[in-house]
Image 1 (cartoon, rainbow, N blue to C red):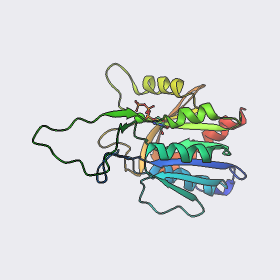
Image 2 (cartoon, protein in one colour):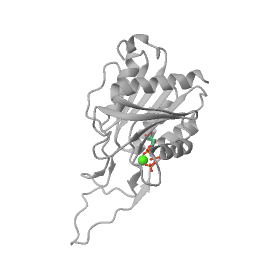
Image 3 (tube, rainbow, N blue to C red):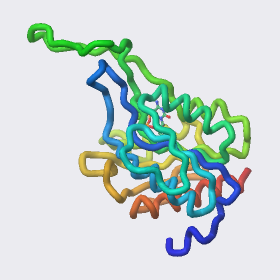
Image 4 (cartoon, rainbow, N blue to C red):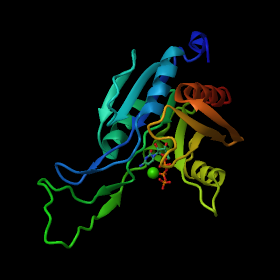
Length: 229
Ligand code: CTP
Ligand code: CA
């Protein structure tokens, strides 16, 4: 990727990236969250800036400082993320949902700390959150806008990584799905990853390398989709 940024092939394009993991608060001190570090979204924002794009980064609970030249919008919950992405994506050319939104949120949030009551444990009542990516696909008004999702999957004996990815691409209706396997020692919080780029045309990869390198491949793929419109 040496000299890659010099191409400035995203100049004039507005890019929106989401990053990090959302948190759903149970009470003033506890939340449901996930292991997303925000590193992939940060790499995407840096790479897009180098290539000349105007970049907005919607960040859920990421402690990293804002990349130079990038406007960061900080959010906490999936509902916050949905609102920020809906606003930012309206005028965007390329949108990447690299964030890991919590899929479930408590049906009610306690204003006071939940206390132990004897030794009976605690049952949580959770409801599903908004599917941000699917709602962005539905809300798309600019037919040239490219929408990219990620899929973090744990393959099983019955379903391979590719099977899971293809089913998710069809379900979400986005243009590209960046597929990666996740696990205790895979993907989360690491500087590198291995991805497959899934589109209607098929699977491209696997590609392994630093998240900076993979970010450039993802923007190449986004531009490829755009030129097809
Ligand atoms: N996503 C989203 N809103 C949600 C959940 C996920 O926009 N409430 C996005 C993620 O940012 C990602 C893509 O959808 O780009 C796929 O996320 P993933 O968690 O792999 O898929 P889900 O549809 O949530 O399905 P599941 O977790 O059950 O596999
Ligand atoms: Ca999910």
